[in-house]
Image (cartoon, rainbow, N blue to C red; front, side, top):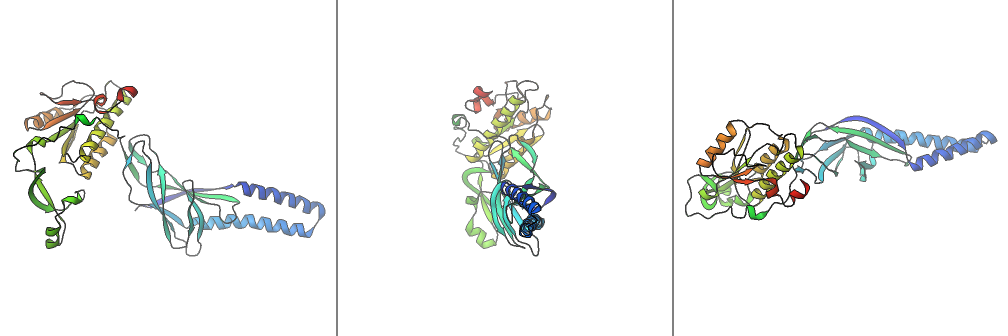
Length: 352
């Protein structure tokens, strides 16, 4: 976990605090006119209460630090909830009634030397790399006269994946084609191939528990690859028209939605684009790598020579190519299933 660096704080009168200050003004005016010692005493107690509120809130917030825990994946236009760890590093002062990012009473009580977890919600409208925004932690302790807050800024950034939409299932429903033979390569069919060490991202259902118990470490099953299931998703990073950013965002959304659909269906695919080539897989880590690339990719005016050559090599190797592109301008010297955003995403023509 990475800490958040402290920024400036602020203090503002609450509605109750404003009423109390007005009441003190009336008491002070009456005490001055009547020269009444009791009224002077009440005025002194009131002013001392205001000062005590400021001092108590200052020391209550001074020892607080916030750290971010492991983050779930963030997607465009989907609420993103991050778990924050609030720690009280003070050795003598507890904190009361803490609100985090506008969520009132997120932490009612935080003892000195202790920590609590709370969740904050954000919404990102654009894909890409975003700095995690400022976190405001505040309190109205002890009397509710002042709203005292501290602003903390994250020292890390967050990758926001492209928008994911439902696609036409009939376009990919026939990708699993039965085959009577398997190649000797590792793959994703139903025929056992070998055992190997577990790596992060592997599906837990593939763990071979008996073999893992014997060797004292996790091992997973691998299966033979069916030649007919070899699939390549090729993304052409070029907009429908020059400087058409909306069309390019539709293209990125289509590619990301197709990748999610294939991975969730357990269909292994290779991903190919300009200067990017990812080995065939249907694992969560493979999907995350594809979405990370699509989160930061920009439109290219001209494609390099390597991309068409890689597509030709894929075709000659017998892979089925799904070409995600806006137009039918051939970048492949042979047939390929062209999947434009308008075909992949239902109802796209209404918003394009």
